[in-house]
Length: 430
Ligand SMILES: [Zn+2]
Image (cartoon, rainbow, N blue to C red; front, side):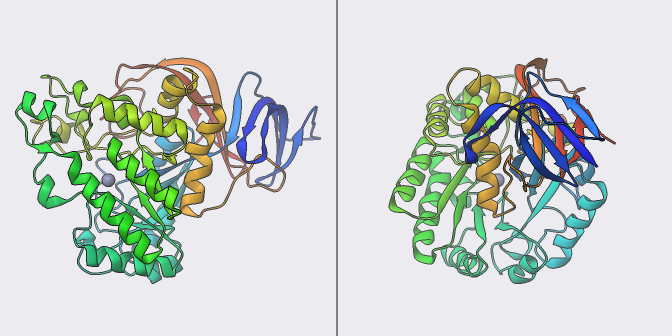
């Protein structure tokens, strides 16, 4: 079947494309990009005033299935992804059971094929049961399609264990993605250690608890040569370490979440909003500014949500008892447009690099370009739509967003995965 997208503003920095053009899609592939195109039969859509980019990928998402389907499942999580403009997500392995063998990888792939509204790239655990003690069945998982390894949710405590993980992963050419957290130092920390922990009388999660593992893992990257990706980086010093590693030529990349860019510890008031309890915690305003500077200068490779759904009853508890995490799939793109693109701080091209090109490159999954021959994974954006974030508006099963009530500008209106619409005019295609 043919699909013709007319009059769209097409942007793809990989091929220097930034113009108004038509796109013809046939059998899931882009077959032509140019002016005044037509098709004999098929579907025609007028995308005047809209922007079309290579489909967005969120490389850090918790879909919660198997094991925690009360929070989210693969069907609802990928619907939230489509609603947010994503054509693909990388699922974290901290489910129940943990995805630490080929059977788990196959389960997630099968559920995604059956119920998914976005491509699901599966990451496998580094260690069995995320315990940080014994290597997972890495080779078997790679053979069954795992794209990367991570013990996300936990830091791997032993340097020797981390070295073995990286030695093994590098044999398969896979990236190791690290949640940097020194447990002995962080302990029961609830919020950033400093002003906010003092003001609220809660145990602190110091920046050093993250930075020590970043430093260690960069050293182990140097030792093993294994590609290293620092997950949800939150501190100015941590980012400087990544900059130095890159300058040295090490295969180190990093990601930042919108909540660490656009919120800070100052947002946690005596209302104790548990949606603002995240791991790693919201840091200082200075850190957030440093991270934004890193996004602008290219030191930050990818924007991810760390979409972490939790039920209302879990979050409706005392701050210390509530679980860490907030959802993000449905607000990420709009937050980036509102706070950075619309303010002239980054270009649309940079946004595409951060949310589409780089995540794919880091995961080593299929490259998508707006040219003939490419798979038609596309995101269509209305850069002017103004909307308000509400619980009722969420497609996710959970509503634990730190941005409820925010008025945002710009939103995905249509998403195509392999040429098929998963989102059309802002509605999920069933
Ligand atoms: Zn994490």
